[in-house]
Image (cartoon, rainbow, N blue to C red; front, side, top):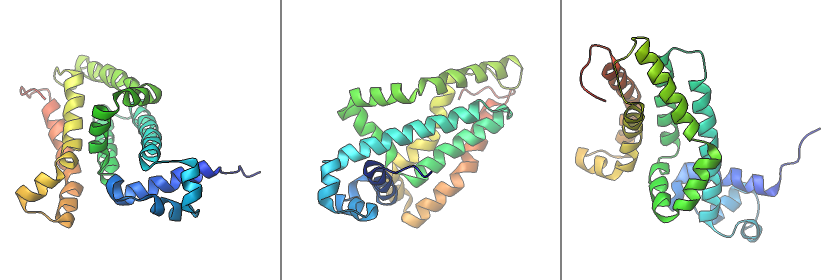
Length: 208
């Protein structure tokens, strides 16, 4: 028996595809209605604003992302392989939705209560707890040098997120067009992974 997909689910899925393709600013409600195969009146009946739709899409994406990262952290893979997959997952997310970092910052400023609700619902604190435990285990096993788990996680976040927060500045200062910037981001994965791995080697003394 095939489950019936609700109109709300169809709209949210359509909104996700439009936001991923065009970004929040360029997406229009008429684009979402067209993608969902409904008229705008029906769209506005279910969702009155683009902001509301985006918040729902973002919350779902946040929960899915948390699930993916926890799956990586809970796997039996070696520590450095887990780091590689985490960095890759981050960069894949931002490449498919480059507007997300700026949206998160804006939401933290404009709607802190909602962001705290999303964080508690998606249980992102579990990621940090699991990550911290793994880092401490690797240090005690002599596989990595002593490093603060919080600082390491912040370094990973900065390496993956900053280019998308500073995209206009990077393009201007480096003289890059959209295509060149995308190529730079495609190449960034190996650079980011290598940087973090080298920083964690036992014989390194520079803090991450």
